[in-house]
Image (cartoon, rainbow, N blue to C red):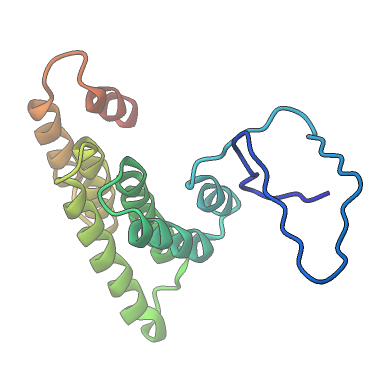
Length: 168
């Protein structure tokens, strides 16, 4: 029996045998419960939930590289930015890590700015607000991107509105 994060799906199974005299007399195939597919975000989300920010970041990057332009890539872009902010938070503020901290903020800013070109543009405002707060900005500076995004929402049914209201 195998246990895999991404189980086989579908209605067909292929068997291959090679060599002389190969004879398959009986085959039994059984499932262990209802098959369930996981989103490609499940593994990096699991890492992030455990505070393994660098591992999560690497997996979100794999999604960005493997599925550009997809809804999952947009979400991975936001979550990768969040991971970079958490790595920034975990790095000591001393001189040896100053360049690492700067790199994290710069990369996170790029991720959140790229989000503005996706359906999750409201999430960009959340990321930019968190970024402003970490850069030492005032509350007004941090709220600026959020208020701007609220003005850009298209009525009460805009999916971005709920995220912005929950964040605020």
